[in-house]
Length: 76
Image 1 (cartoon, helix red, strand yellow):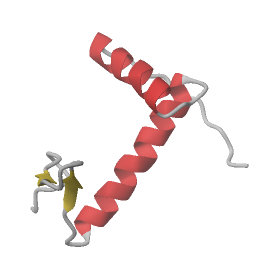
Image 2 (cartoon, rainbow, N blue to C red; image 1 turned 120 degrees about the horizontal axis):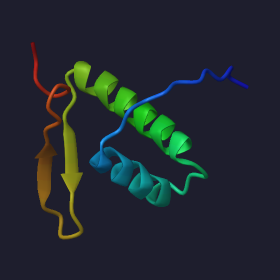
Image 3 (tube, one colour; image 1 turned 180 degrees about the vertical axis):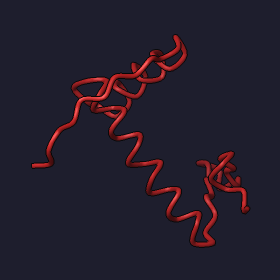
Image 4 (cartoon, rainbow, N blue to C red; image 1 turned 90 degrees about the horizontal axis):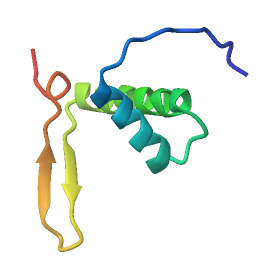
């Protein structure tokens, strides 16, 4: 098991709402677990996008959209 390290953060009301929403959507037991999952997802996306990949979403009708995440999808 990974060693745990305590981190204290100041969050805006929007951040708190987002962690609550992610806790429900990701079925995590705590907000800390939801934040950890979100960090893992963001890290994976960042690594993929650094490797000249694009993030594409296809809806149920088959329409495709390119997803742009500021800071991750913009090349320096």
